[in-house]
Amino acid sequence: MENAAERYYVKPLKKLFGNDIMIKKEKNIIEYIVFDGEKEEFFLSFYDKTDRIDLFWEKEQFIFDRKRELLGYDESCGNFVYENMQDISDDEKMANVILSIINVLNNGVFKDKQVSEMGEYTNFMRVEKLNYVLYIEKRGEEHREYTFGNIRIIVNNNFGTGQ
Image (cartoon, rainbow, N blue to C red; front, top):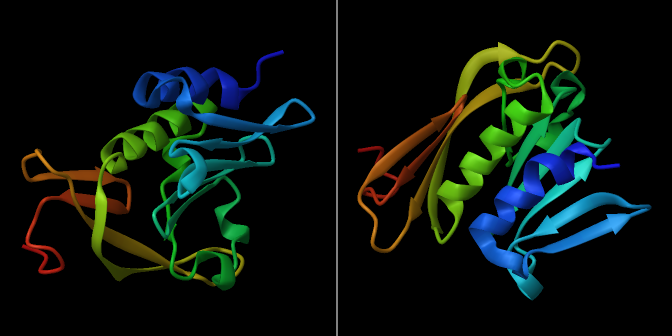
């Protein structure tokens, strides 16, 4: 039986990265999908089937967690935590957001990031919700900006200046 990770991620990722993606399974359930071969610096990690999905790119981690209110400071500190989970309540919508972010990050190089407070806290752990701006460089592309909830990715800008 096909699970959500196979249904919503494997086919689109094979289109983007070819058959070179590596899929790691445990008990026939996908745990990781790796996009950059042996480097293993660009990959998805699945927890609790698809209740929590982490995207790792270069040295950055993006967290998509349906149980966001249970994330503690240690897990969220320094990472990009997607705060709009209520907008992506089903697996397909969640996959669309994550695949869009992967598409933007693909062939990009980290330049800088900025973090600002939203003035809100999670219900349970009182962890501050944050807005993130990620600056990346992509050769051969025009300046572009992408917004995914509280995460904004700016491609080919005056890095770190917010301009």
